[in-house]
Image (cartoon, rainbow, N blue to C red; front, side, top):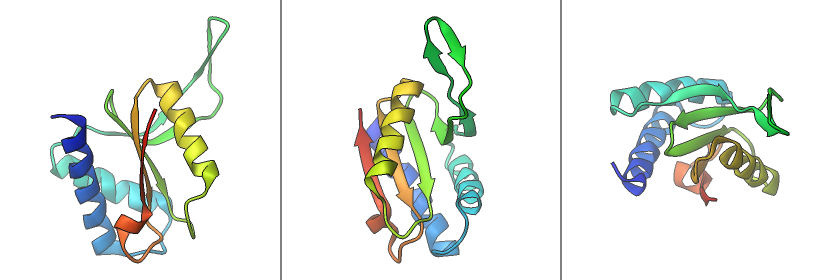
Length: 123
């Protein structure tokens, strides 16, 4: 499955979650429901994956966690905020660098139409 097709499938799953739940819930609620939808779609994803920092030959656990990782393919960072801010993009860029994955999706569920809360990021 190429990454663009995978991204479209993930967006479809996120839209289904948003259609069912609407805006206004906690990120953790959206995460659990999106994990269910991804599994139903046959997409192998992992939630809350720790990302250590490589520093002078050591791996240091610094508390970074990816909301959802599709190993080697895509990082998903979920939000439930008034609007996406530059700090959210910076956070995603950090996660992409630490994970070695080149593509990510910022998904803000706190919008009336989910397509208005999506941002694709490529490292």
